[in-house]
Length: 338
Image 1 (tube, rainbow, N blue to C red):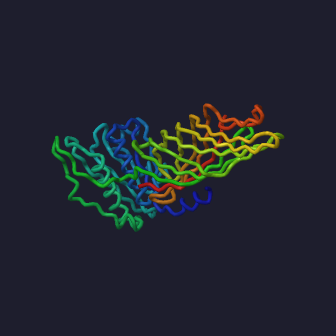
Image 2 (image 1 turned 60 degrees about the vertical axis):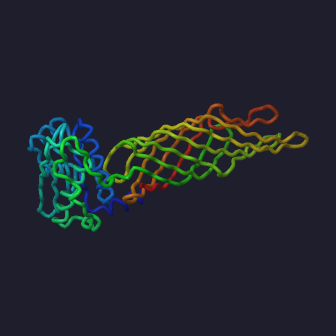
Image 3 (image 1 turned 30 degrees about the horizontal axis):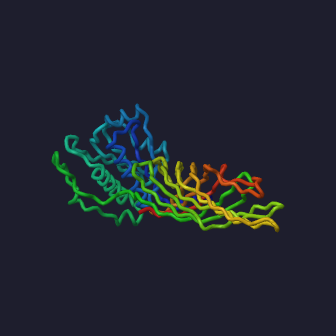
């Protein structure tokens, strides 16, 4: 993870700060979400810059110096949506680090109905042209074009803005593996996992996982031995703060089903038995995601699970091991965002 982080940071030539007011409206929140997603899809390193109430007031009056903000935050460029609660302008500032800087401001019509996708695309195009002029734009940014005929200058009230291409990937498909350990006699499991996610809000995901057909753990006693296998499927909510950079925290809470299969091998003259059990499973997780590209992300999470009724392994009526009371899991997965 450390090596990948160093490699990823070295690959990003331009860092763009996205200005976030202290109390953004729903329109501003969605606009900033779309701007951040589009910047990441272009391969630019993004950083969310949170303003104080005083700084936001100065920005709305047009007196905030973006060059000073960029210097304080260590960014090469800044993009800001000015105006609260209705956006009135888009402001972009960038420097080539050699003494040349460009500061541009694109007014918006505050009386017209504004679509977040329209504001975001106009802002990205303004930033793109600025970076190209300063010879800072990577090839993917230079080659990116937007059909301006699809962006009305001021859509009429009551009219629907034309559909625009989605700026932010919202669906994720992933695959990886779990390493699972219990605390009471059931040893280590290793099993593959499949994951999907739907980013239905800027920081919230609906996500599900299925995992099974992995290794078995062996429990031994003087009366015999037993091989234990566990499979699971869960569905829940995930939270990932909207933040710049390639590394982002991940949190999740889910519930689902745990399937436990136990195959016993008894010492003669005792009788061997097989048992199967379904349990309700609750799963809490925390970890981090490392963005390796515009659509590819590597995630590492730690899970704490508990099941009811919890599975137990018994020999001649004596409980010698239990599982999911609780279980600790470590998961590694690669995800593709669509």
